Length: 222
Image 1 (cartoon, rainbow, N blue to C red):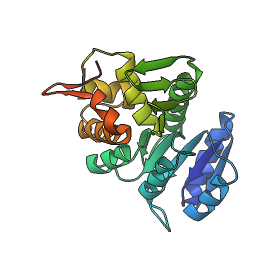
Image 2 (cartoon, one colour; image 1 turned 60 degrees about the vertical axis):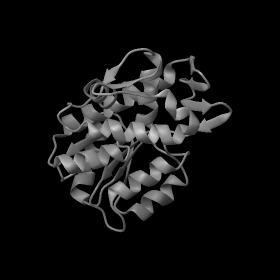
Image 3 (cartoon, rainbow, N blue to C red; image 1 turned 45 degrees about the horizontal axis):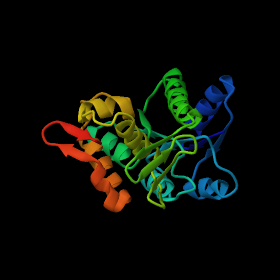
Image 4 (cartoon, rainbow, N blue to C red; image 1 turned 90 degrees about the vertical axis):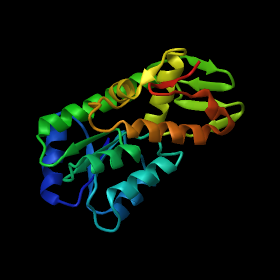
Protein backbone atom coordinates (compact mmCIF):
# COMPACT_ATOMS: atom_id res chain seq x y z
CA UNK A 1 0.00 0.00 0.00
CA UNK A 2 1.23 3.47 -0.94
CA UNK A 3 -0.01 6.58 0.84
CA UNK A 4 -0.10 9.82 -1.14
CA UNK A 5 -0.27 13.10 0.77
CA UNK A 6 -1.02 15.71 -1.90
CA UNK A 7 -3.57 18.53 -1.78
CA UNK A 8 -3.98 18.89 -5.55
CA UNK A 9 -6.87 16.61 -6.52
CA UNK A 10 -5.89 16.45 -10.20
CA UNK A 11 -2.41 15.22 -9.26
CA UNK A 12 -3.96 12.77 -6.81
CA UNK A 13 -6.14 11.24 -9.52
CA UNK A 14 -3.29 11.02 -12.02
CA UNK A 15 -0.91 9.34 -9.57
CA UNK A 16 -3.56 6.93 -8.27
CA UNK A 17 -4.51 5.93 -11.81
CA UNK A 18 -0.83 5.37 -12.70
CA UNK A 19 -0.21 3.29 -9.58
CA UNK A 20 -3.30 1.17 -10.20
CA UNK A 21 -2.15 0.54 -13.77
CA UNK A 22 0.98 -1.01 -12.23
CA UNK A 23 -1.10 -3.11 -9.80
CA UNK A 24 -0.09 -0.93 -6.85
CA UNK A 25 -2.66 -0.08 -4.19
CA UNK A 26 -2.84 3.50 -2.93
CA UNK A 27 -4.72 5.87 -0.64
CA UNK A 28 -4.78 9.64 -1.08
CA UNK A 29 -4.98 12.38 1.51
CA UNK A 30 -5.44 16.07 0.87
CA UNK A 31 -4.54 17.17 4.39
CA UNK A 32 -1.96 15.99 6.95
CA UNK A 33 -4.69 15.56 9.59
CA UNK A 34 -6.40 12.90 7.46
CA UNK A 35 -3.04 11.26 6.78
CA UNK A 36 -2.13 11.06 10.49
CA UNK A 37 -5.56 9.66 11.33
CA UNK A 38 -5.07 6.82 8.84
CA UNK A 39 -1.50 6.21 10.04
CA UNK A 40 -2.91 5.30 13.46
CA UNK A 41 -4.95 2.54 11.82
CA UNK A 42 -2.42 1.06 9.39
CA UNK A 43 0.97 1.88 7.91
CA UNK A 44 1.94 1.88 4.22
CA UNK A 45 4.87 0.34 2.36
CA UNK A 46 5.84 3.78 1.07
CA UNK A 47 4.74 7.42 1.34
CA UNK A 48 4.59 9.95 -1.50
CA UNK A 49 4.78 13.30 0.21
CA UNK A 50 4.18 16.76 -1.23
CA UNK A 51 6.06 19.65 0.40
CA UNK A 52 3.55 22.47 -0.02
CA UNK A 53 0.53 21.42 2.06
CA UNK A 54 -2.19 23.03 4.18
CA UNK A 55 -1.99 22.65 7.98
CA UNK A 56 1.71 21.72 7.96
CA UNK A 57 4.36 21.38 5.27
CA UNK A 58 5.77 18.12 4.00
CA UNK A 59 9.15 18.58 5.67
CA UNK A 60 7.40 18.78 9.05
CA UNK A 61 5.44 15.61 8.25
CA UNK A 62 8.65 13.85 7.21
CA UNK A 63 10.47 14.82 10.40
CA UNK A 64 7.61 13.47 12.50
CA UNK A 65 7.69 10.17 10.60
CA UNK A 66 11.44 9.85 11.13
CA UNK A 67 11.23 10.80 14.81
CA UNK A 68 8.76 8.01 15.64
CA UNK A 69 10.30 4.54 15.97
CA UNK A 70 7.09 2.99 14.60
CA UNK A 71 7.31 4.91 11.32
CA UNK A 72 10.99 5.84 11.03
CA UNK A 73 11.74 3.05 8.54
CA UNK A 74 8.90 3.75 6.10
CA UNK A 75 10.37 4.82 2.72
CA UNK A 76 9.40 8.37 1.71
CA UNK A 77 9.62 10.04 -1.70
CA UNK A 78 9.15 13.80 -1.74
CA UNK A 79 7.03 15.42 -4.46
CA UNK A 80 7.96 19.05 -4.80
CA UNK A 81 7.59 22.01 -7.11
CA UNK A 82 10.75 23.36 -5.52
CA UNK A 83 13.78 22.18 -7.44
CA UNK A 84 16.53 24.38 -6.07
CA UNK A 85 19.58 22.66 -4.60
CA UNK A 86 18.68 24.01 -1.16
CA UNK A 87 15.20 22.47 -1.22
CA UNK A 88 16.50 19.12 -2.46
CA UNK A 89 19.14 19.00 0.28
CA UNK A 90 16.57 20.06 2.89
CA UNK A 91 14.38 17.09 2.00
CA UNK A 92 17.26 14.62 1.94
CA UNK A 93 18.65 15.90 5.23
CA UNK A 94 15.22 15.43 6.83
CA UNK A 95 15.33 11.74 5.85
CA UNK A 96 13.70 11.47 2.42
CA UNK A 97 14.70 8.43 0.38
CA UNK A 98 14.24 10.22 -2.94
CA UNK A 99 12.66 13.31 -4.44
CA UNK A 100 10.78 14.06 -7.64
CA UNK A 101 10.28 17.64 -8.83
CA UNK A 102 7.07 18.82 -10.48
CA UNK A 103 6.12 18.57 -13.24
CA UNK A 104 7.17 14.94 -13.48
CA UNK A 105 6.42 12.07 -15.84
CA UNK A 106 4.35 9.22 -14.41
CA UNK A 107 6.72 6.54 -15.67
CA UNK A 108 9.63 8.32 -14.00
CA UNK A 109 7.70 8.43 -10.72
CA UNK A 110 6.76 4.73 -10.99
CA UNK A 111 10.40 3.88 -11.69
CA UNK A 112 11.54 5.83 -8.61
CA UNK A 113 8.93 4.10 -6.44
CA UNK A 114 9.96 0.63 -7.60
CA UNK A 115 13.66 1.43 -7.08
CA UNK A 116 13.10 2.60 -3.50
CA UNK A 117 10.91 -0.42 -2.69
CA UNK A 118 13.51 -2.78 -4.18
CA UNK A 119 16.29 -1.28 -2.06
CA UNK A 120 14.18 -1.55 1.07
CA UNK A 121 13.05 -5.09 0.28
CA UNK A 122 16.59 -6.21 -0.49
CA UNK A 123 17.78 -4.95 2.88
CA UNK A 124 14.96 -6.72 4.72
CA UNK A 125 15.53 -10.02 2.93
CA UNK A 126 19.13 -10.38 4.05
CA UNK A 127 19.42 -12.67 7.05
CA UNK A 128 22.61 -11.98 8.93
CA UNK A 129 23.90 -10.03 11.88
CA UNK A 130 26.92 -7.78 11.57
CA UNK A 131 29.01 -6.63 14.50
CA UNK A 132 31.65 -3.95 14.92
CA UNK A 133 32.80 -3.73 18.50
CA UNK A 134 29.75 -3.18 20.71
CA UNK A 135 27.65 -2.28 17.67
CA UNK A 136 25.29 -4.96 16.33
CA UNK A 137 23.20 -4.70 13.17
CA UNK A 138 20.43 -7.19 12.47
CA UNK A 139 19.91 -6.78 8.74
CA UNK A 140 16.84 -9.00 8.60
CA UNK A 141 15.01 -7.15 11.36
CA UNK A 142 16.43 -3.77 10.32
CA UNK A 143 17.53 -3.06 13.90
CA UNK A 144 20.67 -1.59 15.43
CA UNK A 145 21.95 -2.08 18.97
CA UNK A 146 24.86 -0.48 20.76
CA UNK A 147 25.64 -2.70 23.76
CA UNK A 148 22.12 -3.45 25.05
CA UNK A 149 20.48 -0.27 23.81
CA UNK A 150 18.44 -0.23 20.59
CA UNK A 151 19.21 2.70 18.32
CA UNK A 152 16.31 3.86 16.15
CA UNK A 153 17.53 5.00 12.73
CA UNK A 154 15.90 6.28 9.57
CA UNK A 155 16.21 4.20 6.41
CA UNK A 156 19.08 6.30 5.10
CA UNK A 157 20.91 6.35 8.43
CA UNK A 158 20.60 2.56 8.56
CA UNK A 159 21.80 2.15 4.96
CA UNK A 160 24.75 4.46 5.57
CA UNK A 161 25.82 2.65 8.74
CA UNK A 162 25.32 -0.75 7.11
CA UNK A 163 27.49 0.19 4.13
CA UNK A 164 30.34 1.34 6.37
CA UNK A 165 30.14 -1.75 8.61
CA UNK A 166 29.89 -4.16 5.66
CA UNK A 167 33.03 -2.60 4.23
CA UNK A 168 35.08 -2.15 7.40
CA UNK A 169 38.52 -0.76 6.71
CA UNK A 170 37.47 0.92 3.46
CA UNK A 171 37.38 4.70 3.21
CA UNK A 172 34.33 6.09 1.41
CA UNK A 173 34.34 9.56 -0.08
CA UNK A 174 31.25 11.69 0.31
CA UNK A 175 30.61 11.30 -3.42
CA UNK A 176 30.74 7.50 -3.15
CA UNK A 177 28.32 7.54 -0.22
CA UNK A 178 25.88 9.78 -2.07
CA UNK A 179 25.96 7.43 -5.03
CA UNK A 180 25.71 4.20 -3.00
CA UNK A 181 23.20 5.24 -0.34
CA UNK A 182 21.15 8.01 -1.95
CA UNK A 183 21.55 6.94 -5.59
CA UNK A 184 21.95 10.58 -6.60
CA UNK A 185 24.57 12.60 -8.40
CA UNK A 186 27.31 13.97 -6.16
CA UNK A 187 26.74 17.42 -7.63
CA UNK A 188 23.62 17.79 -5.46
CA UNK A 189 25.47 18.46 -2.21
CA UNK A 190 27.91 16.39 -0.18
CA UNK A 191 26.75 18.18 3.02
CA UNK A 192 23.90 15.67 3.12
CA UNK A 193 26.42 12.96 4.04
CA UNK A 194 27.97 15.07 6.80
CA UNK A 195 24.55 15.80 8.29
CA UNK A 196 23.63 12.10 8.39
CA UNK A 197 27.01 11.10 9.84
CA UNK A 198 26.64 13.73 12.56
CA UNK A 199 23.12 12.49 13.39
CA UNK A 200 24.32 8.88 13.42
CA UNK A 201 27.10 9.73 15.87
CA UNK A 202 24.64 11.54 18.13
CA UNK A 203 22.21 8.60 18.14
CA UNK A 204 24.99 6.09 18.82
CA UNK A 205 26.18 8.16 21.78
CA UNK A 206 29.53 6.92 23.07
CA UNK A 207 29.54 4.42 20.21
CA UNK A 208 29.55 7.24 17.67
CA UNK A 209 33.34 7.29 17.64
CA UNK A 210 33.26 4.09 15.59
CA UNK A 211 32.65 6.27 12.52
CA UNK A 212 35.97 7.93 11.83
CA UNK A 213 36.59 10.97 9.66
CA UNK A 214 39.43 10.74 7.20
CA UNK A 215 40.30 14.37 6.77
CA UNK A 216 40.01 15.58 3.19
CA UNK A 217 38.64 12.20 2.02
CA UNK A 218 35.52 10.89 3.77
CA UNK A 219 34.52 8.32 6.39
CA UNK A 220 35.53 4.85 7.56
CA UNK A 221 34.71 2.22 10.19
CA UNK A 222 37.74 0.13 11.13
